[in-house]
Amino acid sequence: MALTRNEHFQMPAAERNHGCRRIGPDPKGEPMTRFVQFVTSLVIAGLILFAVLWRFDLRQMLALTRQARVTALMLGVALMVAAYLFRGVRWRIWELSLSYWDSLRLVLIGFMGNNVLPARLGEILRAHCASAKAGNHRGRTALLASVTTERILDGLVLATFGIIGIALVPVDGRLRWALLAVSLVFAGLASGLVLGILAHEPIRSFLAAANRRFPGHVTAFASNKASHFLDGLLALGTVRRMLGAIFTTAIIWSLEVGFYYFVGLAVWPSFTIRIAALFVVVVNFASIIPFTMGGIGTIEAIAPPFLIGLGIAPPAALAMVLIQHATQFVCTTVTGGIVYLAGGFYRIPLSDPKAAIGPPPERPLPSPVVETLSG
Image (cartoon, rainbow, N blue to C red; front, side):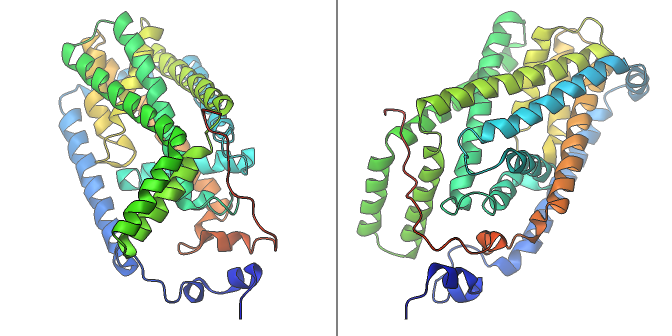
């Protein structure tokens, strides 16, 4: 006898999935794997920090930190908070089923996850939690694609800031080429994003043909996930949404530049907005390296030499980086942790996030058809 959709969702997840073969690692071994990754990331971060800090005069750095201008730091923190508030606005440009409050909370949960989990797993945590809040047609894979889209837009705008900054600020040749290389990578990813939106139907046809040519659980699983991933990209598939997302991303990173500027000014009176723009780019591109949690160690290893190369005294350069990093790390970890616990997101079942919001209504759902950039 066929079950209604309500009856289907009221069944336990194990019963609903009975007879389905799991593709992927055994979940019983995942906690130990996560623990090993956590410890490894912590050890790497500690070793990098030790290797970096012993080269600096920590007494001078602490003296400069204590003497930092509080007014400038408060202005910087206000701009940083505004940037996070705008991130909640940005995600709703294409994730229309989320309220602003849910969008902001999920963004903060993602940052918190990146700070306490290795390999930037906070993005996956954010997608998992979002799947319990988004519409029934938006699963974890589609939402992970949505988060990936956001990161590509961040990288594209940062790359633009970096190229402009290189033209305005004399930097070391190696750093110049490194920034250009990362900028080209994000330009390629942005091109892939647009291509995925414009050519989603041929891509789906190719995946279906590959599944027919090589039938099996693995190819069916991969084809299904790829299709859901394309659905996540298509949410940004109109010119209006794309331009709105890029414009909002530019606002976000302009506010971040203001935050970095006031942090630098609090420690080094001759700090300039041009240096701040490159400072933002260097720190955030360094944080992409997935060896440590929250960029601990990698940011401290890369950002101070950049600032020193621009004529800033080593103790002041280290003080700027530590104040900036500690402020953002503590702010996002504490607020993200609070909304994660207070909002009950930790109760969302791993096997079936949709169960956290109850069964969907007994009516057919519209297919996620959206305009594409060509429409």
